[in-house]
Every structure is written in structure tokens, then in C-alpha cells.
Amino acid sequence: MSDSPDTAVENIVLGQPTVGEEELAAVAEVFRSGWLAGAGPACRRFEERFAKAVGTQHALTTSNCGSALYLGLRVLGVKPGDEVIVSDYTFPATGHAVLQAGATPVFADIRPDTFNADPASIESLVGPRTVGILAVDVFGQPGDFDEYRAIADKHGLWLFEDAACSAGATYKTRPAGSLGDLAAFSFHGRKGITAGEGGALVSDREDLIAHARKLHTYGIEPAFNREGSDELPIPTFHEAGFNFRLSDVQAAIMNVQLDRLPELLATRRAAAKHYHDAFAGLDGVEVPVALPDREHPWQTYALMIAPELSRGQVALKLRERGIGCNFGTYSSHLQPVYGEQRPLPVSADVFARQLAIPMHSNLTDAQVERVATVVREVVTELS
Ligand SMILES: *Cc1c(COP(=O)(O)O)cnc(C)c1O
Image (cartoon, rainbow, N blue to C red):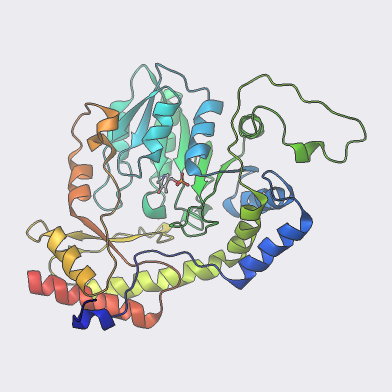
């Protein structure tokens, strides 16, 4: 249609899953096995392996991270009237889960360098109705879990990690997922390892995971757990559970993705390093901070655009030149669904100025190079 010279330019997308022949072969095997539903042998195998990888005793696969967050809050006993302190800067699935459990999210402001909840803000929000802290590893980099734990212990609160983007991340050598009493992961297509959709709830606490396992399958033990019994066990329903299962088709994909995690992380780490070096000293942008005591899995690479530049203009010019980009994530307290909230200046500022640029495990060195060059040119031109 258009005869603009830009039509010849290759588009470099913001995010993309890395899946291929190995995942297809694993899916074919599930087809042959006949067990396509959820909570079957492929899920069981992935749960055992994933728990080991994230350093917990137990893991439960779920339909997505939102259902894992909700199940986690339910098995922690969250109820109407309770308040849960939630990191403000996140995809709002985090706050939604608290609302869905009938409780009130109270949003904590963030650190300007890592975008994770600021421990001082959390501490200031603890009140008589506070039951726990739901802390997000923003873009996968773990928050300040030693400080979060100290606050939780001091006030008798539980600590729940939203580790949606964190597969492969570490905090002081401990894997993300093992940092709270519970953690929830996402396997959505935009995350570091993916089955298109999917999630997991992990914990050392057998009681919590056992309860969540029943709730995720309508309130009874999954059918696979009854296989092989020589009696005819007939389950009884004591609670109105849900179908929050991951299918075995998805679990088979996840088993391959888990094997590939080190390779996928290495590609993103190299891209992040290239970006860092390319943008060092470039006026108009600040690069994201990866703290030395944690491994950042780089689910997203987001620049902060200087206040004197128009982020919209930067985004428009990048897209014109075939470079995918978008805002970072959301300030929860600014979303109407949560009603009137106290102002959180750091989160609001980050929400207004952050711009994510291409970051995924299919990026070639040449593509990373081209993104870096175009970003430098656009920012310099608009400065
Ligand atoms: C993506 C994301 C979620 C939601 O994950 P789903 O699997 O889509 O439910 C929750 N929290 C954070 C921090 C996320 O990035």
C-alpha cells in the first residue's frame, strides 16, 4: 500500500516467545499419551522439576499467574476486611487478586532505581487490619526481600512474592520463588519461559499447596492422584473450588522451556549488557539498574526518558523506524478499579516516563545493535 521507504525496514518486536521443534515434539508425546487434561503426568513432572529450580519444597501448576495469586491469598486465609500491602508498580493482576479475595489492596510506593516496593513505604502502611505483604519482582528483578521479611516478622504478617516475570532470577544467591512464604509465577507469552498461558504457585508449606491443589480442581484431589488405586475412591466436596489447572499439553511445553532457561537467560543478559554499554552517557535516558546482589532475568528492559523529552515522540519515532516499544507497566493506585488512593509520587513518575524497548531471547546481536543505534539517534534528535 505505502511506498514509504520504511516498508523495507525490518521490524524488531518488543517481546516474543522462544519456542520451536523441541516444544512441538513434547506436545506430540502428550498427544500420544492420551492425557491432555490438566494435573496429569506432565504437570506432575514439571511441578517436581520447577520446585527444585526455584528452591521450594512444593509447586502447583495453575492456569495463569492471576489464578496462582488468588489461590495463594485464599489458602493464606485472606478475607473481607483484611488489608494487603501491594507493590504499586505492577501489572494489576496483583491488586486484582486481593480484590477478588474480598480484601483491600493498600499500595506501597517504589524505589526509583529498581521499581520494586520501597521497604520504608511498606512499613509506613502497616495497620491493625494488615495481614500480609504482596511484593512484586518488577520485570523479574527481586525486591528487597530481607527488609520485607524483617517487616513481616516484626508485625506478624505473611510475605507473598509475585514472581510472574522472575524465572531464573536470584536474590543474594537464593532463587526467586523461594523468597516469601509463597510465590506465584506466570508462563504467559510475554514472560521469560512460556507455554502461551500458564502459571505456578510455589511454597515450602505443604499445607498451603495441598489446599491450593484442591481449590484448583473444584475442591477435590486431581483424578491423576487417584489413578492406580485398586479401590474405587470417591471424593467428597467440602469447598466450591475452581478449574485453575494448567493442561498437560502446556506442562509438556514448560518442561522443555525449563531445560532451556539458562540459554534463554544468557541471550537476554547479553542484550541487556549491550544496551547498557550503548546508552552509557547518553543524555535524555537512564538505563535500568540491576543490583549486584541479584540476578536480573530481563523479562523487560525499560529506559527512563528524561522529563524534558516527550516519551510519546520517542515512541512514535522508534516505531516509525521499526523498533517495537511500549510503556513499562502500570501504577496500580492510578487505576479507577481501586478507587480513591493516596498519591505515590515515585510510582506515578516512573509510570509517566518509562519506555520498554525490545527484549526477548530471539534477538540477534545485529538486531540489538540496530535497536541501540536507532534509540541513540532518536533520543539525540529530540534532545
Ligand atoms: C504478567 C504478570 C501477571 C499476570 O500473569 P498472568 O499469567 O497473565 O495471569 C501478574 N503479575 C505480574 C507482575 C505480571 O508481570
